[in-house]
Image 1 (cartoon, rainbow, N blue to C red):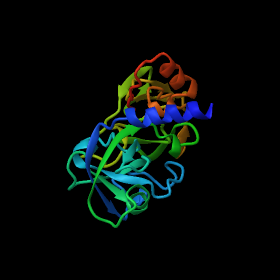
Image 2 (cartoon, rainbow, N blue to C red):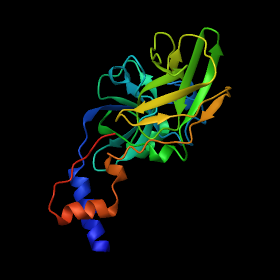
Image 3 (cartoon, one colour):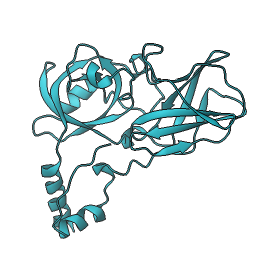
Image 4 (cartoon, helix red, strand yellow):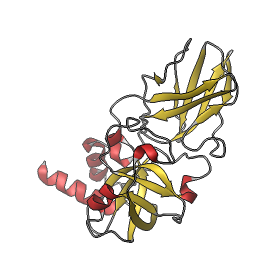
Length: 248
């Protein structure tokens, strides 16, 4: 069994490819002061294992916020970190690592190093169901920030009077991973969250609002290599089928 495991993980190391490459740099980041708008408790403690993503891949809608990436430098083991900020001056493929992440991943003096990376599930940074934080609500405005999600979020909708309405996502109006409904809301209402793989989570009806809503649900995000079981991997090897990395 041990020999078989060694063979499997050796093969995995060989076939694991990375979609992106660029420069890795370092800065003294803080999750609660980043452009994504997260708070210290938005995810479980990351111990500084976080980074700012380049402006192009951050995009106009902040949808890379809260996603995780697997970063590889030289022959060191790859390390999983979470995106919590934007690096405006970085070019596509670059990541600006928190100092703590740099020390674990690069293991050298601060500078500029070539790295490879790819998006991956955020299992290290969540321990429960998706939470929705409500920071702003008035007669003209209602915004929601998702927290504790396993893989990327593509869209959110609000249901009012049995009508699903797509929520706005625009950094020019509010910087960070916020979904906005630009009117006052009425009760009851419910919310729908859609992952980058079109998984849907629909909440219960709410007749009041608290600062944080627990959806009691989580995305499966099953099409990622980090979710393969030993049986999945060994079965494919025994069948002589190629292993491919499916991104999240």
